[in-house]
Length: 232
Image (cartoon, rainbow, N blue to C red):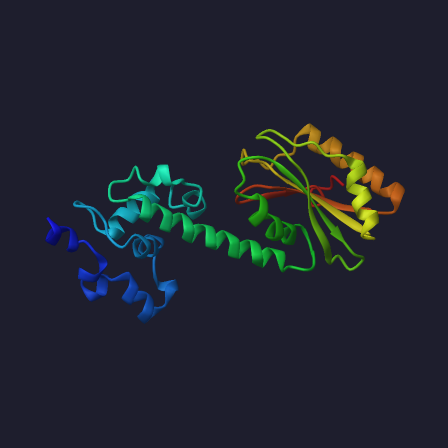
């Protein structure tokens, strides 16, 4: 029994089929997603190699690594050959990747358009299962002075106090702000409340000489810009 199981471990594969050696020789970019996951789990089960098992796991989530990062230990151990330790390894690796993306987003100092708003906010909001509303406070060169979570809500919405939005802007002498929130549903279409809130904050900003530049709705893979669609 032990000899059979050992034959499925990566170290017993032919050299050409070993993801670890392939990574060393050809570099990480040469490996498929399944091969990278196979390195994490090390071995498969009686019927599958580590790569085959990894492919099967990825196939159940349409080969979407963002979806893989959302799986829990309980979800992963349902796959034959994945125990708690392997599940934790997968979750840890994906979480490190998410945090790396977040750190890169936090380093972006200047907003040049709606795409750069998406690049800054997607790592923060894109994978959340609840809605959050954030404000980017900018100086007169459109450099980010502060990213601030204004509210956090349930699956269907958040509440935003316009007084607090502009209070913080005045405190840090921001000359412009960008509104951003996520839609956990995956739809980028603005709701009627999104539209009315944007109009309300735009009008409030004009009274205080604070430019409300855009409102960007974020989903996992896409975004909607009010400014790009002439709705500001």
